[in-house]
Length: 464
Ligand code: SAH
Ligand code: SF4
Ligand code: F3S
Image (tube, rainbow, N blue to C red; front, side):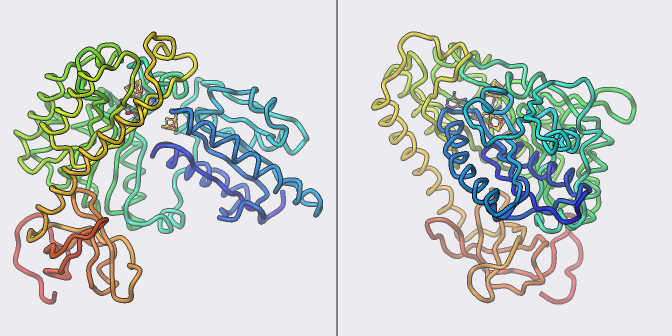
Protein backbone atom coordinates (compact mmCIF):
# COMPACT_ATOMS: atom_id res chain seq x y z
CA UNK A 1 0.00 0.00 0.00
CA UNK A 2 1.47 3.40 -0.93
CA UNK A 3 2.74 5.51 1.95
CA UNK A 4 1.51 9.09 1.94
CA UNK A 5 -2.07 9.47 0.85
CA UNK A 6 -4.28 12.42 1.60
CA UNK A 7 -7.83 12.39 2.88
CA UNK A 8 -10.15 15.39 2.87
CA UNK A 9 -13.13 15.07 5.21
CA UNK A 10 -15.97 17.57 5.33
CA UNK A 11 -18.60 17.50 8.08
CA UNK A 12 -22.07 18.81 7.33
CA UNK A 13 -23.84 17.83 10.53
CA UNK A 14 -24.09 17.94 14.29
CA UNK A 15 -21.33 17.53 16.89
CA UNK A 16 -21.59 13.77 16.62
CA UNK A 17 -21.06 14.06 12.88
CA UNK A 18 -17.89 16.11 13.56
CA UNK A 19 -16.74 13.56 16.14
CA UNK A 20 -17.31 10.77 13.61
CA UNK A 21 -15.20 12.65 11.06
CA UNK A 22 -12.31 12.74 13.52
CA UNK A 23 -12.67 9.05 14.22
CA UNK A 24 -12.67 8.27 10.50
CA UNK A 25 -9.42 10.24 10.18
CA UNK A 26 -7.97 8.30 13.14
CA UNK A 27 -9.06 5.00 11.56
CA UNK A 28 -7.47 5.91 8.23
CA UNK A 29 -4.16 7.13 9.73
CA UNK A 30 -2.67 3.60 10.09
CA UNK A 31 -3.61 3.05 6.43
CA UNK A 32 -1.18 5.82 5.49
CA UNK A 33 -3.69 8.67 5.17
CA UNK A 34 -2.96 12.15 6.46
CA UNK A 35 -5.67 14.79 6.58
CA UNK A 36 -5.67 17.67 4.16
CA UNK A 37 -7.78 20.81 4.03
CA UNK A 38 -7.56 20.99 0.21
CA UNK A 39 -9.99 18.64 -1.54
CA UNK A 40 -8.48 19.14 -5.00
CA UNK A 41 -5.27 17.26 -4.24
CA UNK A 42 -6.81 14.59 -1.99
CA UNK A 43 -6.68 10.88 -2.84
CA UNK A 44 -9.83 10.31 -0.83
CA UNK A 45 -12.69 12.76 -0.27
CA UNK A 46 -15.26 11.94 2.43
CA UNK A 47 -18.44 13.99 2.63
CA UNK A 48 -19.93 13.36 6.07
CA UNK A 49 -23.54 14.33 5.51
CA UNK A 50 -26.55 15.40 7.57
CA UNK A 51 -30.16 14.50 6.83
CA UNK A 52 -31.94 16.48 9.54
CA UNK A 53 -33.48 19.15 7.29
CA UNK A 54 -34.01 19.33 3.55
CA UNK A 55 -31.46 22.12 3.19
CA UNK A 56 -28.82 20.11 5.03
CA UNK A 57 -29.37 17.11 2.75
CA UNK A 58 -29.33 19.30 -0.41
CA UNK A 59 -25.82 20.44 0.45
CA UNK A 60 -24.53 16.97 -0.46
CA UNK A 61 -25.64 17.19 -4.07
CA UNK A 62 -24.35 20.72 -4.61
CA UNK A 63 -21.01 19.69 -3.09
CA UNK A 64 -20.91 16.55 -5.26
CA UNK A 65 -21.21 18.78 -8.33
CA UNK A 66 -17.97 20.55 -7.36
CA UNK A 67 -16.18 17.35 -6.31
CA UNK A 68 -17.06 15.67 -9.59
CA UNK A 69 -15.15 18.37 -11.51
CA UNK A 70 -12.15 17.92 -9.19
CA UNK A 71 -12.25 14.17 -9.70
CA UNK A 72 -12.20 14.64 -13.48
CA UNK A 73 -9.30 17.11 -13.30
CA UNK A 74 -7.36 14.64 -11.15
CA UNK A 75 -8.12 11.81 -13.60
CA UNK A 76 -6.92 13.96 -16.50
CA UNK A 77 -3.65 14.39 -14.61
CA UNK A 78 -3.42 10.62 -14.12
CA UNK A 79 -4.41 10.74 -10.44
CA UNK A 80 -7.16 8.65 -8.94
CA UNK A 81 -9.55 10.33 -6.50
CA UNK A 82 -11.94 8.19 -4.44
CA UNK A 83 -15.21 9.81 -3.37
CA UNK A 84 -17.06 8.54 -0.29
CA UNK A 85 -20.39 9.74 1.07
CA UNK A 86 -20.76 9.04 4.79
CA UNK A 87 -23.21 10.16 7.49
CA UNK A 88 -26.96 10.31 7.78
CA UNK A 89 -27.81 10.97 4.10
CA UNK A 90 -25.71 7.91 3.26
CA UNK A 91 -27.74 5.90 5.77
CA UNK A 92 -31.09 7.25 4.54
CA UNK A 93 -30.51 7.14 0.77
CA UNK A 94 -27.94 4.36 0.34
CA UNK A 95 -27.57 3.17 -3.25
CA UNK A 96 -29.78 6.05 -4.47
CA UNK A 97 -26.70 8.27 -4.07
CA UNK A 98 -24.73 6.13 -6.54
CA UNK A 99 -27.60 6.43 -8.99
CA UNK A 100 -27.79 10.22 -8.64
CA UNK A 101 -24.06 10.83 -8.85
CA UNK A 102 -21.68 8.66 -10.83
CA UNK A 103 -18.72 10.40 -9.15
CA UNK A 104 -19.40 8.52 -5.90
CA UNK A 105 -17.40 5.33 -5.24
CA UNK A 106 -18.51 4.51 -1.71
CA UNK A 107 -21.60 5.10 0.44
CA UNK A 108 -21.03 4.34 4.11
CA UNK A 109 -23.50 4.72 7.00
CA UNK A 110 -22.57 5.89 10.53
CA UNK A 111 -22.50 2.35 11.93
CA UNK A 112 -19.87 1.09 9.48
CA UNK A 113 -16.96 3.52 9.81
CA UNK A 114 -14.75 0.91 11.45
CA UNK A 115 -14.99 -1.04 8.17
CA UNK A 116 -13.60 1.85 6.06
CA UNK A 117 -10.23 0.17 5.34
CA UNK A 118 -11.82 -2.96 3.87
CA UNK A 119 -14.49 -0.94 2.04
CA UNK A 120 -11.76 1.19 0.45
CA UNK A 121 -9.89 -1.94 -0.60
CA UNK A 122 -13.01 -2.91 -2.54
CA UNK A 123 -13.39 0.50 -4.22
CA UNK A 124 -9.70 0.28 -5.20
CA UNK A 125 -10.64 -2.79 -7.22
CA UNK A 126 -13.17 -0.67 -9.11
CA UNK A 127 -16.27 -1.76 -7.23
CA UNK A 128 -19.00 0.75 -6.28
CA UNK A 129 -19.71 -0.05 -2.61
CA UNK A 130 -22.68 0.63 -0.32
CA UNK A 131 -22.53 -0.28 3.39
CA UNK A 132 -25.51 0.91 5.42
CA UNK A 133 -25.90 -2.12 7.65
CA UNK A 134 -26.45 -1.83 11.39
CA UNK A 135 -23.81 -4.46 12.17
CA UNK A 136 -24.03 -6.52 15.35
CA UNK A 137 -20.47 -5.66 16.46
CA UNK A 138 -19.76 -2.51 18.47
CA UNK A 139 -18.06 -0.06 16.14
CA UNK A 140 -16.50 1.73 19.11
CA UNK A 141 -14.57 -1.45 19.93
CA UNK A 142 -12.96 -1.36 16.53
CA UNK A 143 -12.71 2.34 15.64
CA UNK A 144 -9.26 3.70 16.36
CA UNK A 145 -8.84 5.74 19.51
CA UNK A 146 -7.98 9.40 18.98
CA UNK A 147 -4.22 9.71 18.54
CA UNK A 148 -2.23 12.05 20.73
CA UNK A 149 -1.03 14.12 17.80
CA UNK A 150 -4.53 14.41 16.37
CA UNK A 151 -5.90 15.48 19.72
CA UNK A 152 -3.25 18.13 20.18
CA UNK A 153 -4.10 19.57 16.78
CA UNK A 154 -7.74 19.82 17.82
CA UNK A 155 -7.22 21.91 20.93
CA UNK A 156 -8.29 22.11 24.56
CA UNK A 157 -11.93 21.15 24.20
CA UNK A 158 -13.15 17.78 22.90
CA UNK A 159 -16.33 15.85 22.28
CA UNK A 160 -16.74 12.26 23.34
CA UNK A 161 -19.66 10.18 22.11
CA UNK A 162 -21.19 8.28 25.03
CA UNK A 163 -24.56 7.39 23.55
CA UNK A 164 -25.79 7.07 20.02
CA UNK A 165 -29.19 6.63 18.42
CA UNK A 166 -32.66 7.50 19.58
CA UNK A 167 -35.81 5.60 20.54
CA UNK A 168 -38.03 8.67 20.94
CA UNK A 169 -39.45 8.99 17.42
CA UNK A 170 -40.51 12.63 17.46
CA UNK A 171 -42.81 12.85 14.46
CA UNK A 172 -40.61 15.36 12.57
CA UNK A 173 -37.22 13.69 13.04
CA UNK A 174 -35.06 11.35 10.95
CA UNK A 175 -32.49 10.54 13.64
CA UNK A 176 -34.10 7.28 14.87
CA UNK A 177 -33.94 6.05 11.27
CA UNK A 178 -30.42 7.25 10.43
CA UNK A 179 -28.72 6.49 13.75
CA UNK A 180 -30.75 3.51 14.89
CA UNK A 181 -31.77 2.48 18.39
CA UNK A 182 -30.21 3.93 21.56
CA UNK A 183 -26.85 2.39 22.38
CA UNK A 184 -24.62 3.43 25.29
CA UNK A 185 -20.86 2.89 25.45
CA UNK A 186 -19.44 1.16 28.53
CA UNK A 187 -18.01 3.41 31.26
CA UNK A 188 -14.45 2.01 31.12
CA UNK A 189 -14.16 2.74 27.39
CA UNK A 190 -15.33 6.32 27.87
CA UNK A 191 -13.01 6.91 30.82
CA UNK A 192 -10.06 5.51 28.86
CA UNK A 193 -10.84 7.88 26.00
CA UNK A 194 -11.15 10.87 28.33
CA UNK A 195 -7.84 9.95 30.00
CA UNK A 196 -6.14 9.85 26.61
CA UNK A 197 -7.60 13.22 25.72
CA UNK A 198 -6.53 14.70 29.08
CA UNK A 199 -2.98 13.40 28.56
CA UNK A 200 -2.91 15.18 25.23
CA UNK A 201 -3.88 18.49 26.87
CA UNK A 202 -7.67 18.50 26.64
CA UNK A 203 -9.25 20.41 29.55
CA UNK A 204 -12.93 20.40 28.62
CA UNK A 205 -14.97 17.38 27.62
CA UNK A 206 -18.49 17.45 26.20
CA UNK A 207 -20.23 14.11 26.45
CA UNK A 208 -22.44 13.77 23.40
CA UNK A 209 -25.39 11.65 22.42
CA UNK A 210 -28.61 12.23 20.48
CA UNK A 211 -30.37 11.63 23.74
CA UNK A 212 -27.49 11.79 26.18
CA UNK A 213 -29.48 11.68 29.41
CA UNK A 214 -30.88 8.29 28.40
CA UNK A 215 -27.29 7.04 28.92
CA UNK A 216 -27.25 3.66 30.61
CA UNK A 217 -23.84 2.20 29.74
CA UNK A 218 -22.34 -0.71 31.59
CA UNK A 219 -20.27 0.33 34.60
CA UNK A 220 -17.13 -1.40 35.88
CA UNK A 221 -19.42 -3.14 38.40
CA UNK A 222 -21.34 -4.77 35.55
CA UNK A 223 -24.43 -2.65 36.31
CA UNK A 224 -25.92 0.07 34.09
CA UNK A 225 -24.67 3.52 35.11
CA UNK A 226 -26.64 6.74 34.74
CA UNK A 227 -25.28 9.88 33.11
CA UNK A 228 -25.01 11.52 36.53
CA UNK A 229 -22.78 8.73 37.78
CA UNK A 230 -20.68 8.83 34.61
CA UNK A 231 -20.18 12.58 35.04
CA UNK A 232 -18.96 12.06 38.61
CA UNK A 233 -16.44 9.49 37.38
CA UNK A 234 -15.15 11.69 34.55
CA UNK A 235 -14.82 14.71 36.83
CA UNK A 236 -12.15 12.67 38.67
CA UNK A 237 -9.93 12.30 35.61
CA UNK A 238 -6.80 14.40 36.30
CA UNK A 239 -6.57 17.42 34.02
CA UNK A 240 -10.25 17.64 33.17
CA UNK A 241 -11.46 21.04 34.36
CA UNK A 242 -14.80 21.33 32.60
CA UNK A 243 -17.65 19.02 31.72
CA UNK A 244 -20.69 19.47 29.55
CA UNK A 245 -23.28 17.10 28.13
CA UNK A 246 -25.48 17.46 25.09
CA UNK A 247 -28.10 16.94 23.76
CA UNK A 248 -30.54 16.05 26.45
CA UNK A 249 -34.23 15.45 26.10
CA UNK A 250 -36.47 17.16 28.67
CA UNK A 251 -37.73 13.74 29.77
CA UNK A 252 -35.36 11.16 31.31
CA UNK A 253 -34.06 13.43 34.05
CA UNK A 254 -33.00 11.23 36.91
CA UNK A 255 -31.94 12.52 40.34
CA UNK A 256 -28.22 11.75 40.01
CA UNK A 257 -28.03 14.03 36.98
CA UNK A 258 -29.81 16.90 38.69
CA UNK A 259 -27.59 16.40 41.75
CA UNK A 260 -24.47 16.48 39.58
CA UNK A 261 -25.30 20.11 38.82
CA UNK A 262 -25.06 20.83 42.54
CA UNK A 263 -22.13 18.57 43.39
CA UNK A 264 -19.70 18.87 40.49
CA UNK A 265 -18.00 22.26 40.14
CA UNK A 266 -16.58 21.04 36.80
CA UNK A 267 -20.07 20.67 35.36
CA UNK A 268 -20.73 23.92 33.53
CA UNK A 269 -23.90 25.88 34.34
CA UNK A 270 -25.18 26.04 30.77
CA UNK A 271 -27.60 23.35 29.67
CA UNK A 272 -28.87 22.78 26.16
CA UNK A 273 -32.40 21.48 26.55
CA UNK A 274 -34.35 21.43 23.27
CA UNK A 275 -38.04 22.23 23.68
CA UNK A 276 -39.18 22.73 20.04
CA UNK A 277 -42.45 24.48 20.94
CA UNK A 278 -44.19 26.20 23.85
CA UNK A 279 -47.66 24.90 22.92
CA UNK A 280 -48.96 21.66 24.42
CA UNK A 281 -51.01 20.87 21.28
CA UNK A 282 -47.89 21.03 19.12
CA UNK A 283 -45.70 19.18 21.63
CA UNK A 284 -48.25 16.35 21.56
CA UNK A 285 -48.39 16.32 17.75
CA UNK A 286 -44.58 16.20 17.75
CA UNK A 287 -44.67 13.21 20.11
CA UNK A 288 -42.26 15.01 22.43
CA UNK A 289 -43.75 13.11 25.41
CA UNK A 290 -43.75 16.17 27.67
CA UNK A 291 -45.88 19.24 28.21
CA UNK A 292 -44.87 22.85 28.60
CA UNK A 293 -45.30 22.45 32.37
CA UNK A 294 -43.04 19.38 32.41
CA UNK A 295 -40.39 21.35 30.58
CA UNK A 296 -40.61 24.24 33.05
CA UNK A 297 -40.36 21.74 35.90
CA UNK A 298 -37.19 20.24 34.38
CA UNK A 299 -35.70 23.76 34.25
CA UNK A 300 -36.75 24.53 37.81
CA UNK A 301 -35.16 21.33 39.14
CA UNK A 302 -31.80 22.40 37.72
CA UNK A 303 -32.16 25.98 38.93
CA UNK A 304 -32.89 24.68 42.42
CA UNK A 305 -29.53 22.90 42.41
CA UNK A 306 -27.49 25.62 40.77
CA UNK A 307 -28.84 29.14 40.89
CA UNK A 308 -26.52 30.36 38.12
CA UNK A 309 -27.86 27.88 35.55
CA UNK A 310 -28.59 29.22 32.10
CA UNK A 311 -30.41 27.42 29.31
CA UNK A 312 -30.19 27.16 25.57
CA UNK A 313 -32.66 25.32 23.38
CA UNK A 314 -33.89 24.34 19.92
CA UNK A 315 -37.15 25.51 18.37
CA UNK A 316 -39.05 24.44 15.29
CA UNK A 317 -41.49 26.98 13.86
CA UNK A 318 -44.25 26.15 11.41
CA UNK A 319 -44.82 22.55 12.47
CA UNK A 320 -47.98 21.26 10.70
CA UNK A 321 -51.08 22.75 12.31
CA UNK A 322 -49.19 25.42 14.30
CA UNK A 323 -51.59 28.34 14.80
CA UNK A 324 -50.75 31.92 15.74
CA UNK A 325 -51.87 31.16 19.27
CA UNK A 326 -49.46 28.18 19.40
CA UNK A 327 -46.66 30.40 18.19
CA UNK A 328 -47.52 33.02 20.83
CA UNK A 329 -47.16 30.27 23.44
CA UNK A 330 -43.65 29.64 22.12
CA UNK A 331 -42.80 33.35 22.42
CA UNK A 332 -44.18 33.40 25.96
CA UNK A 333 -41.97 30.45 26.88
CA UNK A 334 -38.93 32.34 25.57
CA UNK A 335 -39.78 35.22 27.89
CA UNK A 336 -40.45 32.92 30.82
CA UNK A 337 -37.22 30.86 30.62
CA UNK A 338 -35.04 33.66 29.18
CA UNK A 339 -32.96 31.29 27.05
CA UNK A 340 -29.47 32.68 26.56
CA UNK A 341 -29.26 31.19 23.09
CA UNK A 342 -31.24 28.95 20.78
CA UNK A 343 -31.08 27.19 17.46
CA UNK A 344 -34.23 28.02 15.52
CA UNK A 345 -35.46 26.10 12.51
CA UNK A 346 -38.30 26.24 10.05
CA UNK A 347 -40.09 22.92 10.02
CA UNK A 348 -38.74 20.84 7.14
CA UNK A 349 -40.83 17.83 6.08
CA UNK A 350 -38.64 14.74 5.98
CA UNK A 351 -39.60 11.79 3.79
CA UNK A 352 -40.77 8.82 5.81
CA UNK A 353 -41.55 10.74 9.02
CA UNK A 354 -45.17 10.99 10.25
CA UNK A 355 -45.25 14.81 10.35
CA UNK A 356 -44.46 15.03 6.64
CA UNK A 357 -47.88 13.43 5.99
CA UNK A 358 -49.84 15.60 8.45
CA UNK A 359 -52.53 18.00 7.18
CA UNK A 360 -52.22 21.79 7.62
CA UNK A 361 -48.64 22.15 6.46
CA UNK A 362 -47.67 25.78 7.10
CA UNK A 363 -46.80 28.03 4.14
CA UNK A 364 -43.15 29.04 3.79
CA UNK A 365 -43.93 32.77 4.20
CA UNK A 366 -45.55 32.20 7.61
CA UNK A 367 -42.62 30.03 8.71
CA UNK A 368 -40.15 32.72 7.71
CA UNK A 369 -42.08 35.41 9.54
CA UNK A 370 -42.34 33.35 12.73
CA UNK A 371 -38.67 32.46 12.52
CA UNK A 372 -37.66 36.13 12.45
CA UNK A 373 -39.98 37.07 15.29
CA UNK A 374 -38.64 34.21 17.40
CA UNK A 375 -35.03 35.02 16.61
CA UNK A 376 -35.40 38.63 17.68
CA UNK A 377 -37.05 37.56 20.96
CA UNK A 378 -34.14 35.23 21.68
CA UNK A 379 -31.56 37.83 20.65
CA UNK A 380 -33.10 40.25 23.18
CA UNK A 381 -32.58 37.79 26.03
CA UNK A 382 -29.11 36.86 24.84
CA UNK A 383 -28.07 40.49 24.75
CA UNK A 384 -29.49 41.15 28.20
CA UNK A 385 -27.68 38.11 29.60
CA UNK A 386 -24.35 39.12 28.05
CA UNK A 387 -24.76 42.72 29.24
CA UNK A 388 -25.44 41.43 32.75
CA UNK A 389 -22.05 39.67 32.72
CA UNK A 390 -20.12 42.93 32.35
CA UNK A 391 -18.55 43.85 35.67
CA UNK A 392 -18.65 40.26 36.89
CA UNK A 393 -15.78 37.78 37.16
CA UNK A 394 -15.87 34.32 35.62
CA UNK A 395 -13.48 31.47 34.97
CA UNK A 396 -12.33 31.41 31.36
CA UNK A 397 -10.78 28.44 29.58
CA UNK A 398 -8.23 29.87 27.17
CA UNK A 399 -8.19 28.18 23.78
CA UNK A 400 -5.91 29.98 21.35
CA UNK A 401 -4.17 33.17 20.33
CA UNK A 402 -6.51 35.94 19.22
CA UNK A 403 -6.47 37.87 15.98
CA UNK A 404 -4.46 40.74 17.44
CA UNK A 405 -0.95 40.47 18.91
CA UNK A 406 -1.04 39.88 22.65
CA UNK A 407 -4.65 38.78 22.61
CA UNK A 408 -5.84 35.38 23.77
CA UNK A 409 -9.36 34.01 23.30
CA UNK A 410 -11.29 31.63 25.47
CA UNK A 411 -14.74 30.66 26.61
CA UNK A 412 -16.75 31.52 29.69
CA UNK A 413 -18.72 28.82 31.55
CA UNK A 414 -21.67 29.93 29.36
CA UNK A 415 -19.67 29.38 26.15
CA UNK A 416 -19.46 33.11 25.50
CA UNK A 417 -16.33 33.95 23.48
CA UNK A 418 -13.97 36.04 25.65
CA UNK A 419 -11.03 38.16 24.49
CA UNK A 420 -8.28 39.15 26.89
CA UNK A 421 -4.79 40.66 26.65
CA UNK A 422 -2.68 37.90 28.20
CA UNK A 423 0.54 35.95 27.67
CA UNK A 424 0.21 32.87 25.41
CA UNK A 425 1.17 30.73 28.41
CA UNK A 426 -2.43 30.93 29.66
CA UNK A 427 -3.65 28.85 26.69
CA UNK A 428 -4.94 25.58 28.06
CA UNK A 429 -5.64 26.93 31.53
CA UNK A 430 -8.68 28.21 33.34
CA UNK A 431 -8.10 31.69 34.75
CA UNK A 432 -10.27 34.24 36.48
CA UNK A 433 -11.31 37.13 34.25
CA UNK A 434 -13.30 40.25 35.01
CA UNK A 435 -15.51 41.20 32.07
CA UNK A 436 -15.13 44.85 31.13
CA UNK A 437 -16.97 45.34 27.88
CA UNK A 438 -19.40 43.71 25.48
CA UNK A 439 -19.15 43.76 21.69
CA UNK A 440 -21.64 42.14 19.32
CA UNK A 441 -20.01 38.76 19.39
CA UNK A 442 -17.81 38.58 22.41
CA UNK A 443 -16.92 39.83 25.84
CA UNK A 444 -13.70 41.64 26.61
CA UNK A 445 -12.05 41.11 29.94
CA UNK A 446 -9.08 41.66 32.21
CA UNK A 447 -7.12 38.78 33.66
CA UNK A 448 -7.36 38.72 37.45
CA UNK A 449 -4.58 36.17 37.77
CA UNK A 450 -2.44 34.32 35.24
CA UNK A 451 -2.35 31.14 37.25
CA UNK A 452 -4.97 28.51 37.02
CA UNK A 453 -7.62 28.64 39.67
CA UNK A 454 -7.93 25.35 41.42
CA UNK A 455 -11.40 24.34 42.40
CA UNK A 456 -10.71 24.16 46.11
CA UNK A 457 -9.99 27.55 47.67
CA UNK A 458 -6.29 27.49 48.55
CA UNK A 459 -3.39 29.84 49.18
CA UNK A 460 -2.70 32.05 46.18
CA UNK A 461 0.27 30.86 44.14
CA UNK A 462 2.99 33.41 43.45
CA UNK A 463 2.83 35.41 40.22
CA UNK A 464 -0.17 36.56 38.27
N1 SAH B 1 -32.02 14.89 20.12
C1 SAH B 1 -32.24 16.26 20.16
C2 SAH B 1 -32.23 16.96 18.80
C3 SAH B 1 -31.52 16.40 17.63
S1 SAH B 1 -31.83 17.16 16.09
C4 SAH B 1 -33.58 16.51 20.85
O1 SAH B 1 -34.34 15.64 21.09
O2 SAH B 1 -33.92 17.60 21.12
C5 SAH B 1 -31.43 18.86 16.40
C6 SAH B 1 -32.55 19.80 16.16
O3 SAH B 1 -32.91 19.84 14.81
C7 SAH B 1 -33.84 19.42 16.88
O4 SAH B 1 -33.82 19.80 18.20
C8 SAH B 1 -34.86 20.20 16.08
O5 SAH B 1 -35.05 21.49 16.60
C9 SAH B 1 -34.24 20.29 14.69
N2 SAH B 1 -34.95 19.43 13.76
C10 SAH B 1 -35.01 18.09 13.74
N3 SAH B 1 -35.80 17.66 12.72
C11 SAH B 1 -36.25 18.78 12.08
C12 SAH B 1 -37.12 19.00 10.97
N4 SAH B 1 -37.69 18.00 10.31
N5 SAH B 1 -37.35 20.28 10.61
C13 SAH B 1 -36.78 21.31 11.26
N6 SAH B 1 -35.98 21.16 12.32
C14 SAH B 1 -35.70 19.90 12.74
FE1 SF4 C 1 -34.99 13.38 17.00
FE2 SF4 C 1 -36.73 13.48 18.98
FE3 SF4 C 1 -34.79 11.66 19.02
FE4 SF4 C 1 -34.22 14.22 19.39
S1 SF4 C 1 -35.48 12.95 20.75
S2 SF4 C 1 -33.12 12.80 18.07
S3 SF4 C 1 -35.67 15.25 18.05
S4 SF4 C 1 -36.48 11.76 17.58
FE1 F3S D 1 -27.60 15.43 11.03
FE2 F3S D 1 -27.30 12.89 11.50
FE3 F3S D 1 -26.44 14.64 13.23
S1 F3S D 1 -29.04 13.83 10.56
S2 F3S D 1 -27.90 16.28 13.01
S3 F3S D 1 -25.68 14.38 11.21
S4 F3S D 1 -27.36 12.68 13.71
